Image 1: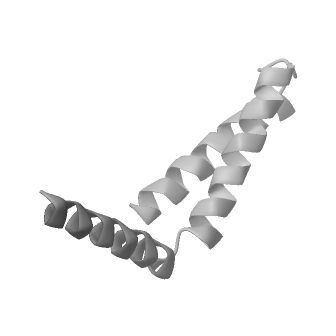
Image 2: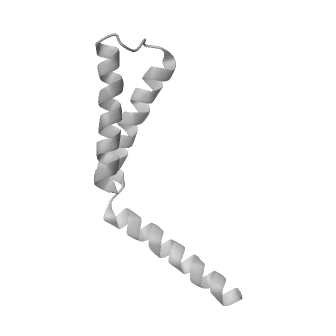
Length: 72
């Protein structure tokens, strides 16, 4: 999923920035917000979502799931 997330965020960022630069899209606050959000998601996909981060979340989920099974 990481490559798809990177491509998706990069495409969104490029489209909004291109629209702003070529004056296709007016620079209203929602457009600027979307450009910033796309750029933020691109940074998150590249730097934050790592195999170690996913593994920690998966281990935590597994522990809670097993604890719930014991109480049933």
